[in-house]
Length: 371
Image (cartoon, rainbow, N blue to C red; front, top):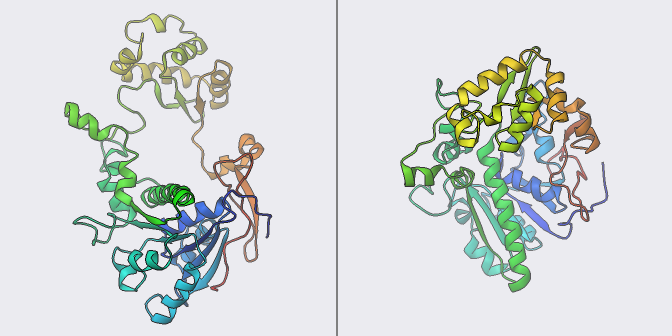
């Protein structure tokens, strides 16, 4: 499987060290946008991601290692370190997600690399960052999610904090590292100088926590787990239909008015209990109950049809089967078919976002053998 590279980063070379999720996902993002990504794996075993995934056949590697070439090198011995330095000499970006201090121990720390390759961008991902009292500690994504505030607010209030069904902490750290690398490349265009991008998992999670810290700092308010809702934001919830579930988000005043029209409740926008955002928030439970009493009289398809007719944001809660059959997904090629030498045809998510002039794409399948 080989496709012409039209990506905006097709003149950028990346050397990807590290393994599992954060570093490799950063490499995937850059590779999806056209970068030439050389993945360095341990000899014999390769990246553990080769064995990750659910189901009878492990295919998580096929997504995260797409658009990459693979070589193997033992970074713990001088010969492997010398090989990697030769690769870095031809690279624009170096990705690594080892425990802080590991690269320095191998003679591949930023002080050495930037002295020899002053234009190099070094994107570093770790649990706690490269500095600070916790920087030496091992830090997986789950710990960063907990310390960054996400775990505490995810789930139902009657249960302990929940995790999301994906490794969101690692992926957020990788996404911010990618953003940092692109910013550093832009800076290099002006100055010729490379730099270090320090992306900590807990800080990447913290960056997504909206006003959680500021609310406490100003008012003493602590956000709690609230299940399917956000407190005081109504109506925005999952509602039962006669044959399933539907998510309706109509908390804005004008949108709420359109929902009321769809429900045949034109007087509700003037009702003191629902007249504005604050009133609806104060009566959230009552309002959600009234809406669900209505949605339960209709099928999911009927509810969605009415929401579309009246311009109210609504949708189903999709799993993979629904995604694969959805006409909008198909029309936008959100999921694409790829060819793999071992698995044959594989369907996976396409590159996002879409660029009009220099679109990214899936140019090659994940490496099957160690280089």
